[in-house]
Length: 264
Ligand SMILES: Nc1ncnc2c1ncn2[C@@H]1O[C@H](COP(=O)(O)OP(=O)(O)O)[C@@H](O)[C@H]1O
Ligand SMILES: [Mg+2]
Image 1 (tube, rainbow, N blue to C red):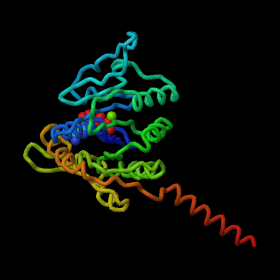
Image 2: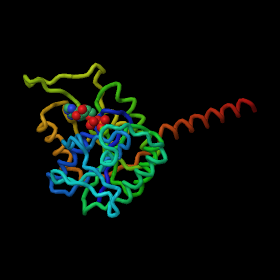
Image 3: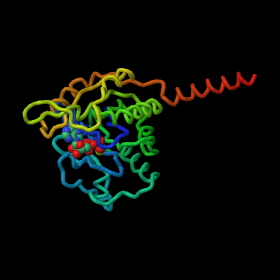
Image 4: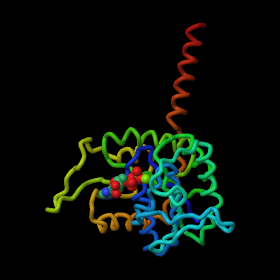
């Protein structure tokens, strides 16, 4: 079972949408796919799957265990099945991390080719624990970002986080990369100027997996994800080297050396 984490330090980039649509595309390509919602405080995977409510867990029954539900040929599991849909989640971080570890380690999935994890947007202790929980058994991280100027800073930080955590990365999806008007004309839909995510990918040596348009037409999205799914089996996951932090330490060390030399 290949575990893929869908990740971005920025909210609203399309992680949940990607989790579901990449899952569906891999399923269309003949794979057995599970989706795990590890966005512990804002679990919306069930919504992106088209459900009004998450199937409820009955943890009071003796036989209760965390069973994935099946929808459109996909298996899925979410903490929304436990919380319900409306309450704010006020668990402290250690409790959230314990629940996340149970989801990662204790769920009996049917035989799967891919398990796609929908993650929350941060480099919090929770996210660090999530990356640590899957370390050693993860196919790779798929990053999802809009190609806007405002998103690039968060993309750079996300790449640095991945370098520090030393998890393999599969590549980046540019989501909402362009918009098509009803006339068929392409246009840029954001206030923030367009950024070249391809250049950021090149600088960091990671592949741009594909561009997905901002659209309400599901078939436009499907086509993009089908293309990505068609080469998912053959991607060589990369461990990125040299985090900003490492460079920063090197710079500090250099400065410390210079200061020491000047004192001599
Ligand atoms: N390519 C797209 N075209 C149109 N709407 C999109 C696209 N990708 C995401 N969205 C919408 O943008 C919003 C945020 O997406 P979501 O997947 O929930 O982001 P995240 O999980 O990163 O917070 C949702 O309303 C979703 O339906
Ligand atoms: Mg989400």
